[in-house]
Image 1: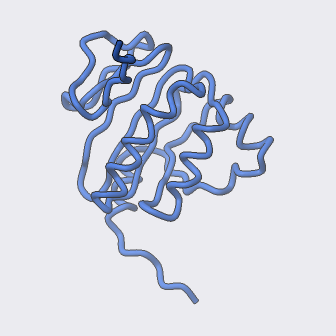
Image 2: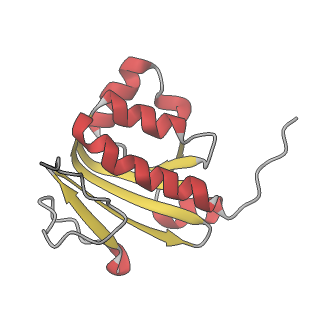
Length: 148
């Protein structure tokens, strides 16, 4: 008997609507898993990921392929967590690991679920923050600052 295989979130969008009323930008791909949903698209020089709902330990294998895709493309990640209601430490670890390559920035406002776990782990200041997607995309197109 073959074991069930988790669907690849990069294969095809889910036909199920997001339970959080999440409408993707410009027909971007959308996936739903458990009590969470994600949409993702490339815009300019960035890979944009919008996460919603409960990001528990079961969702990390859906999020990692999105980070890997950004890493392979060389594009930095811009992540919107504003409607995340629960964030597991494993998901935070994935976001932290993306800081150096491909690079990551978060859109504000940051949800209480993120602030709680990032505050408890001392990692709140580890991310670049942007007030909106337009600002983040302008930032992502800039060359990196030289190190002193």
